[in-house]
Length: 90
Image (cartoon, rainbow, N blue to C red):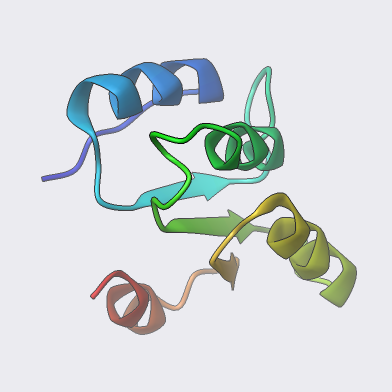
């Protein structure tokens, strides 16, 4: 099953309600950005262990490093290689 949220605040509600097994988030979101969302999840005991994949159109090594520093488990540059995405989710 897949749950979709339009922004980080809605994602937090979905996470609280549905308890997903993995989160896929873009860096650029309206309001709170994806990296702030990841940091917030890592700071919460209930979501700290949830695997998080961050995608971004900004695919420099620095952008990737920022994602990992925020707590991402996986960084996927856009356009997303769907084969890799499936491997990472599996």
